[in-house]
Image (cartoon, rainbow, N blue to C red):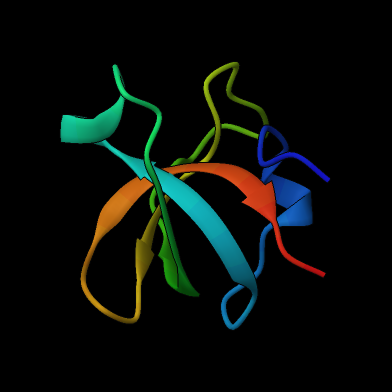
Length: 64
């Protein structure tokens, strides 16, 4: 499942995000969603979230 739809992202969900500084390299950071920062229902580059660790980035993958 990708992270482009806000309805598929919930706090407590394990996801992989790309941080702003890693957008070119595509390096993913795994963590648990703390807050959803994107207000729109969809975003072409992924829903922006804050992880429990404090990292902020766009969801590229939802871990099952």
